Image 1 (cartoon, rainbow, N blue to C red):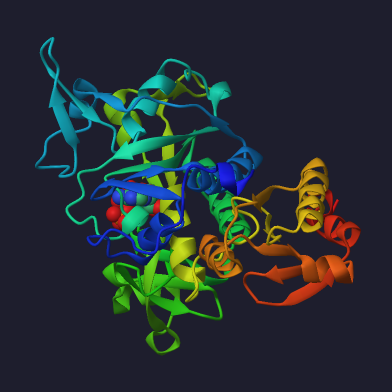
Image 2 (tube, rainbow, N blue to C red):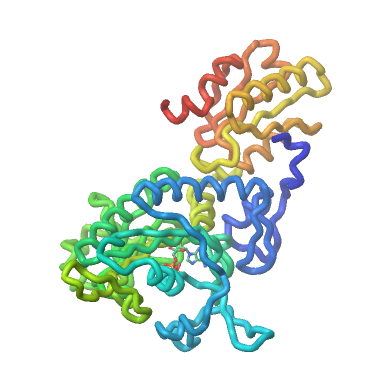
Length: 423
Ligand code: ATP
Ligand code: MG
């Protein structure tokens, strides 16, 4: 993509009312647009990154047998009344509205209810289980605080996977598979080293649930980290009794602020019993289905990556989610040979399957470099009179600042996708 044609421009300032670092940087770099508090649009660069986060999660969910579907945002009130989650006294963050034709609807906060009902039409025998299904879908929550940028939206993207099993043991296997997939996913997203499976309050039918918590001063949660075991305990369950159950000692744990990027739950039979999701076992007896639920917020993950990896110059994307692999910066200063060389390199990189943002604008070097640092693409490649004379372009790694000089052929060899994926 040519930067001269990209409709977004970088900005020196973020909106005055925006206090979160992730949103300030993403707005300044032209990745997102703030509609109102807690509500953000994803612009072309931002959507490229968000889609990469989504793709990484999707691959890991498919790998454990998750089947993708997409459910509706508008929710059937009568369904939620059956699980007692419609009343504002029970769930305090619904967006609800009345229908012109009479009655009420709400915008989905999560999707246990609708998926359980869908499954009740397809699951009837022990032969139909186990199974897992998931979606990527915008959720709507009337959050009280919306000061964390895209990490806490009132409208936000969620990946929600639900598991359906015959027995507790079968449910535990699905839970373990999902847990392992989450660890792989956060590794791929560049957050593995700072993300801890964290024991938290149980939710339904189990002693603990587990959250995936990423260490960051921008976090709203307090956790106690065991470095050696790479696990943690949320403050909400940090009691002597819980620690004893988990085999952890207070003196081995370190207090940290953290961001909850995902969580996994045993649901037991709460939803299947309330909504009549049952199967006939081999003896012909009716049994309730045992469920689990597993969430990740791709937009919260994207904000978290910005919070954790950004430096004083701007965003630093891991390769796996960067909107482009290479930021090709042409400094032709009116020199036609330099321009031609940059154009040729752009063509060759693109035809080798490399995703390139080509800064072909007529602008000063300082401005181009500042924009490039702000946007955070992992590798900046500069073509100038100097590099043309030397026969090698200049390659600067965004994260380390390390600079190398390479011929065009060497550069293409080092960044072509087959090579980066180790094929
Ligand atoms: P929190 O405790 O932060 O309010 P939650 O426990 O309500 O989140 P879940 O309902 O389990 O979160 O949602 C699953 C995942 O969706 C979370 O782990 C998080 O990554 C993401 N998420 C939840 N709320 C938001 C939000 N308001 N904006 C963006 N992502 C969110
Ligand atoms: Mg939570």
